[in-house]
Amino acid sequence: MPTLRLEGSGPEYQRIYRSLRRTILSGELTPGSRMPSTRGLASQLGVSRNTVLLAFSQLLAEGYVEGKGGSGTYVASALPDAMLGIAAPVTRRPRPSPFPARRLSAFGRRITRNPPGPAPSTRWQGRGLRFDFRYGVPAVEEFPHELWRRLVTRRLRGESLRSLGYGAPEGYVPLREALAKYLKRARAIVCDPEQVIIVNGSHQALDLAARLLLDPGDRVVIENPHSVGAREVFLSAGARLVLGAVDTEGLDVAALPPAAAGARLAYISPSHQFPTGAVMSLARRLALLAWAARAGAYVLEHDYDGEYRYEGRPIEAVQALDRAGRVIYVGTLSRVLFPALRLGYVVLPEPLVKPFKAAKFLTDRHTSTLQQEALADFIESGHFERYLRRSRLRYATRRRALLEALEKYFGDRVAIEGANAGTHVLVWLRDAAPSRLPALIERAARVGLGVYPATRYYLKPPRHAGFLLGYSSLTEDEIRAGIQRLATALG
Image (cartoon, rainbow, N blue to C red; front, side, top):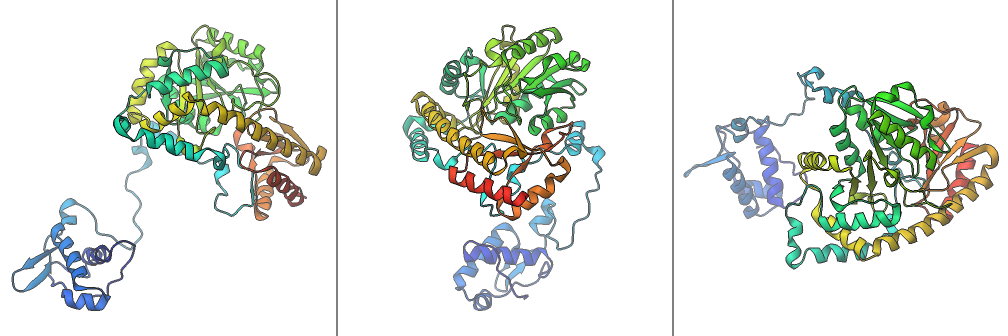
């Protein structure tokens, strides 16, 4: 009997069972050979005989061993893994799959060519960064966790156990009603709750819209720069991207290339353009709606960080100006509350409601009912908007600390964009080319700083090296100390 190596965790009998099963499947104990005595094995492993008997019982129940009356226990002549077609574990490196890439669908080949990946803001996680200027991450430690726990717990009691059943693909009705009322107050959006569909984050909304509206080869107008996640969604659908220039007033509709005339969709982030932070002017919003009417296209409005604006009066959402039913409005709650929530919403023109619900059903059946119910309570009780007001004050203070620190330690060596809204700024190094970014970011990481490149959001590269600096998850003191250290690290 080979010496057993007990690996993994769990009860002793399970570890013994797994070790014996591995020994049988590897061929060290061949079919028909006699198993070691339970007493001898217990002595070898320093455990009770009853523990070994439990392991043997499991092997017997699963068909790996068989008892022969009066003579002991033997390895089964026909192992269950062989009958099920399960290969025994091997220590050799597996051979490459015999199936070539051409066996993939067209969709499979497209996402292989353009594989989606995590945002750079996750790259340095776990590296022990002292000052991490991650963007797109709210101050989760300041979220009212205890209140949320009570809301979820209440929904798990009594008649609310329906939370554990299947839900409607379009979402929990009270949540859709609460969001419709909130969007009217906050963003001037007028819609019926039936037009609101709950999704698993804004990324799913983009994916479903692409599936419903785009065929391979269709054109999509997209801002340059833009969200890489949106770009990956449209490319995976086989779309051809038409780049639109962005300046301080957002997408320049008048300068769209001729190819835009045949586009099926225009993707914009007008309230806080990502990543530049530009706010699209009212004149351009109206011009975009006129373009959509001429082109017979839809406008996909991604309200990125629209809840946070620090200067001037908020401008109405493009959807609020739409009279022809051309705008699909997408919002997220994960970036406002906490990322693990994975809840977003989409407000649809009436003709798209039914197909969108069908696509949502086929994708994942429904979004977590329990989370939706708790969120509906959170909004209806007024906690959501109170939390937003506190967050705006908190982020405004952190934004001010960041701008003051950049002025103090960098002065006119940098240009700053997007400081009047959102939870990040775009910082351009006037004296550095984009090719220097990887070395600069690595230099910063070596002294405990997380800063993130802007270049990946441009298909036409910018002239200077640029960083995205998020400030929502850092205190004012951390922001000041981090910018001082960054200035020293970059020389």
